[in-house]
Length: 248
Image 1: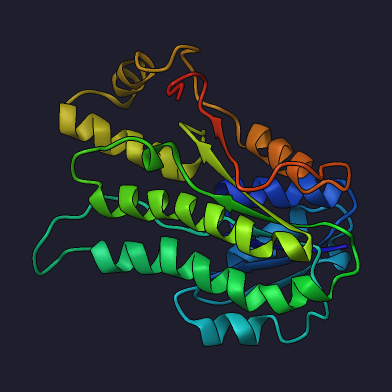
Image 2 (image 1 turned 120 degrees about the vertical axis):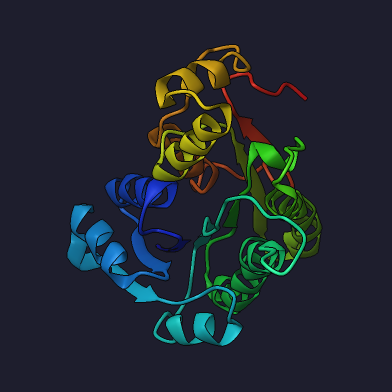
């Protein structure tokens, strides 16, 4: 069974790829940096069974071209996204963040849908990787928070729209996960507080009941469960994996 993973060149996407390859899925890895995708592929079990293709999910045409040689899909893991702050003005990153995280995910799903509908499995799967910041407001992160919150509305809408096709759509909202993006965010937090990165980590973890970050492998295992053939009942749901940082 073939699974597309976007943003597979690093972080959570790379870990999801490693986990799903171990479980026997054939993977189609998408991302902007082909070198990073190839590096991920080399880490996978049976690397010859998997494919890589670079594309920018802000372009529906690039997504369509990247998928040209795919005949059908069992699942899509819509993980690609960018982070960082934005401020209104000439250098505002609002459009870049929204176009990538929200519109890019929307386009990816719709370019994959004809291939998912061709698959003969009784239930197919779409997993959207959102963020705890879909549920929290953080000063200076209006673009990121808005884009990730929009993904939750997209999840619910598509879950209802695609239920008749046997396509289950769910979202994950990870909190702090020990990835390069998280470490960059932590450094920014440290710089703002004018403290060391270790001190910033301790300060950030004060807001987390379990006092730690999640491992990317934990997110990957949750994804693996959600796309498993045995899972036929979760759809339109948002699953929070955040060490207790938010308990809605």
